[in-house]
Image (tube, rainbow, N blue to C red):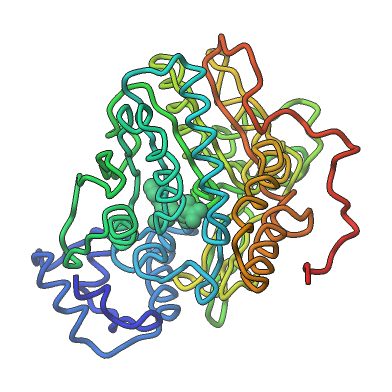
Length: 439
Ligand code: SAH
C-alpha cells in the first residue's frame, strides 16, 4: 500500500476523501483505491496537524471524545494510526520492549510453555496464541526453543492476533524469512521452525482449542476510560478542543453512561478519586478465561501494571521520552498501566489465577542467571558486558524488573504453582540501591 511507503512524519493534505476514509462518511461514494491515490498525490501535511484537524472536526460534529475513542483513533485508525504507520520499536523508535532487549526473555517464556504442556499431560495439539506480537521477536525466540523439543514442536501451531498489516509483515519475516509486497495479506505460512503460523485480526477468529495465550505489552495500549470522583459522583474525563488550538481534557458535567456501566467492579473500600478502566481488555481477559476453562491451556499476561491502586497513568512515549498524551496524536505511543485486580475480577470463578509477580521474580524463577552463564561461556569480554547490561535492564527494580508484572491463568483444578510464580523471599530480592549500569 503506497501510504505506508511515505515518510513517517508526513502525510498528505486533508481532503474530503481522507476525512471520509477516517470517519466512514463517504460523501462522494468513491472507491478505496481512489482514496489511497488521493492520499499519495496531495501536498504533505504534518501528521500531528492532520490528526488535530481530524479530531477537531469529529469533536465539533459529535461533542467531546471519551479517552477510549481518542486512543483507538490515534493508535489503530486503519489509515494513519500510530501502529499502522510508524516504525515504533527499538532504540531508534519510540520505545523498546523486553524481547527486543535480550533473546533470553522470549526463550524463558518458551520454556514456560513447554513445561506447562508437560504438566497438562502433553496434549496432541496445542495452539500458541500471541496477542499483539509487534516485530515477532518474542514469537521467534519462543519458536527457536520449541524446535529443540521435537514432540512439543509437532503438537503446536502458532496463532498471531495482529491488527496492523505493517506489523504482520515484520512478523512474517521474523518467523518465515519471507517478505511480501506491502499490500499482500498472508493468512498462514509454514514457519522456518516447522509449525504453521496463522494470522488473525481478532482473538475470536482463533479456533476454540487448547491454547497457551501470551500477551506481552498488548493490554497497555487498549483503550481506557477515565473517571474522576466529584461530590461523591463519578464524572468522565473527556477530550475536547482547546480555545486557540490543540486539545484539552475536560470533566463531564454529570455521571455519563460509561461511568454508570464501567465502574461496577470497584470495591466499596476503594478510596481512589480517579480511576482508569479498559472494558475492551476486560472482555478479552474474559474470553481467554472461558477458553482455558472450556478447552484447557494457559495464559501468560505481561505488562506494567498495578492491583487496583494507581490513579492517573495515561501517558505518551516518543523517542523514549514521556509526553502529554494530547500533545502529538498519531506520532507518539499512548499507554496506561494495566489493572491486574480488574483482570482477576474479569477472570471469574471458573479458572485459577497466579500473580501478578514482578518480571524480576518470574525471570529469576525461570533461571535467567543460569541461562546467562551458559550463553556467556564462549563470548568475548565486550559481548559478555553487553549481555550483562541487557539482563540488568530486564531485572533491575528501577529498570524493568519491578514495574513489569507477570500474571497467569490456568484451569480451576491446577494443583501447583507454575514456575516463575513462587514469590522469591525477601532474602533473595534484588538490592534496590544498585542504580548504576553494570560496567
Ligand atoms: N508484544 C510486542 C509488541 C507490543 S506493541 C512486544 O512486546 O515487543 C503492541 C502490538 O499490538 C503491536 O504489534 C500492535 O500493532 C498490536 N495491536 C494494537 N492494537 C491491537 C488490537 N486491537 N488487536 C491486535 N493487535 C493490536
